[in-house]
Length: 109
Image (cartoon, rainbow, N blue to C red; front, side):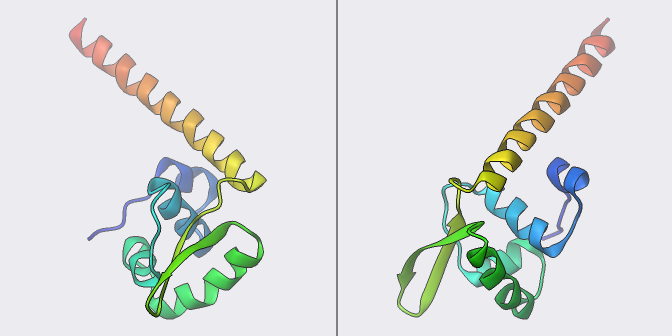
């Protein structure tokens, strides 16, 4: 799997925290294990173990459930920072689609 920067990461910066947040935004509504997050963000598992407690403390993410010894996490969409990031992503995607549409119309003309 090759990690590809999203429009959101290009805008807010490609930090480890932002990568995890972006990954969870892309899979909004799905819960993930630490391994899933590590694989999806292409960061080491020790880094995930280091970063998740900070994101939990800031209420950026939340624990959804435990399956055996595995804890699953998801984005906390009630967090004001996350609400702002979701809105920003919506705006970026809209502008991107408008740009693609304009290029397609120009190519047809």
